[in-house]
Length: 272
Image: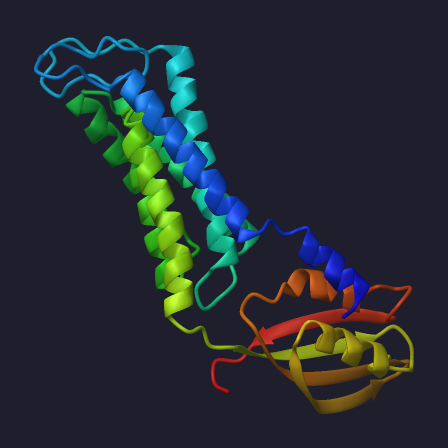
């Protein structure tokens, strides 16, 4: 295997470490929940503890404590980051982009922030609902699994905003374990992609390209070869695992010292 590929693989956190971290966070949040419950049992008064949300029937809104509210946002961001890290290791049919991974964390924080702002005010809830209709997201989420994870992250963020750290911790741990379990139970199909490469010079570095693709366990078949001036163009039909890091592979293919390729383009094939 190519040494550069081995080094990039070693930088990926092992899944057991991600799961262990999530479980530790869940246990810590459960301890916080037991130490400082979100609302007193059997009373109709507002919660008197630092991070507690006001009861629905309270006539006086609960005061905001900057430190406690910041803690809710930090917990939401931490839960979003852990779930996003596990989801990137076990994605759906398509790899998770950098923007989607960031959106998962931000959505979890957004859920917490909305609950902090709303509190027990019905008028605030209507105001946020009305403002949300103005914002339109132009980028659709094609994978149903990604859409579901985003929805669950929003719910976990809302739990953090309400101060229900125990529920948020248990939900995050369960979701991470479920993502791993679903990946083991349901077999994932390999991706079919076309790889277009343009060399920097008249000679195409076929040996280096073939060795690198083999190191990443990519099955490939040469389809087209062309010559445009002083540049060679080659197209490969590739079958690869959905977890194959295309960005790192492309960076190594375009390494000026090793390959001599000017550009690399991956195109998903809907039909094999």
